[in-house]
Image (cartoon, rainbow, N blue to C red):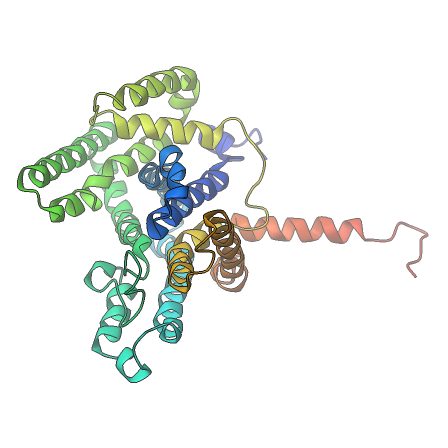
Length: 370
């Protein structure tokens, strides 16, 4: 709750919708991948209405906003690093090793062939966020349209690099004027994306498209989130004007590319709905978005390989949603929340919920429980 002693940023950040937004972004990526990996024509409508690309960009905007906030609120670099490692790596390690060990049961290779040099390379590369070096496991998903075990993990590499870069940028912002520095990094990121994309189209080489979407090309979204965090009071005062201009830019961008303006316009829309209007505490039971994001790809791949619901795309989609939901809840309860600091707002929310529950069951004065 906000109070008279809070700063303007803390006042507006006391309650927000970022947990809900991340859940929606993760759900969007999951649904689009259900179509992309299954190739069911009946599910093509998903890609017509939803965009996994926009959802991932939205994730990067939210990260820019919240991770800079996390760093600025941390008592030290060690405290910041501890929070970031605890939040991202335990679940990441779990999903990588679950796939590395569990998928032996669906591999077309015998265990002796499965646990090979390629298996070791998969473990080592993926555990240090370099999944592009070895995205497949021996004999796994080879009959699927795409053989990658977990193609969604490429963004975690960028996320980890964002985490490392934040202390560097924060230090830079204290040495030089912050606004010009943010604008310079933003423009350099857009220029990198434009150049790599142009080279890719000219040479017809998909490698350059992949390079375009790596860290430098995504910094414009991250830095947009950082700008809106650092200049939140100004954004709040002019939020309606910001939103109106951003919507116009995004509409025009659908017909005429506005590559220099699109990242910031998207960030304005994301942060606006991240703060206004407040829709409730969607994190009170936990943050299931991360688990859903890192688990959905191998779950979909397993369903595709098994051929279940092959004659019913609707049932296939329902099975994906149910399986991913169950997996995300288990990942949160069994792994993620056990590594969070007690100061985490998710842990605090659970403690508050328990306290209210105990108070509700506390006998009234003069009343004896049976």
